[in-house]
Image (cartoon, rainbow, N blue to C red; front, side):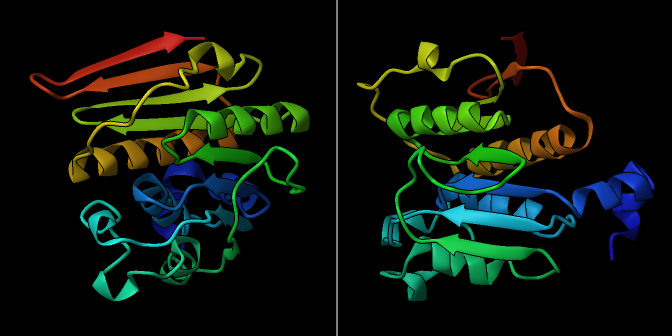
Length: 208
């Protein structure tokens, strides 16, 4: 099943993936892309957590949902859509908080809420595991790998999320998934990546 992937990462690393579990917080636009792209790379488990239901305005950028899904829980619908391979998909239909009892190797943020990200950071620090921050607005995106650095220094609770373009959501979610793959297999230093495509394509990398 993973022959073309094994050609890139090798059989030993493929076996390593089969023992890894990840938690994706948020099943909206970024969550759709991240869960879909990681759902068939050979992971042991993927936990999805989201309390929200699907609305009409979600569909243009939340690619796994359609009009027939309106009113249904995002977590439950996404779980059904990504069950293509052998990875066990577990839906947690509730709000995330740092007291959650889960044994995972990596957390991936797919929210648009700084307070939730602070809870993710607290959970990750308590478990001594890395987490990946992902954010997209208009033509810009940020993806970060956090380990020891506190996310609180980046938090702005008064921030109001701006609009989103489906291709930027797709690009950001795919990039976050690629970073997740590298973190799971090879580990990575703490970094923050910045993408701006409003005019010319700009990509910047910062150490944390």
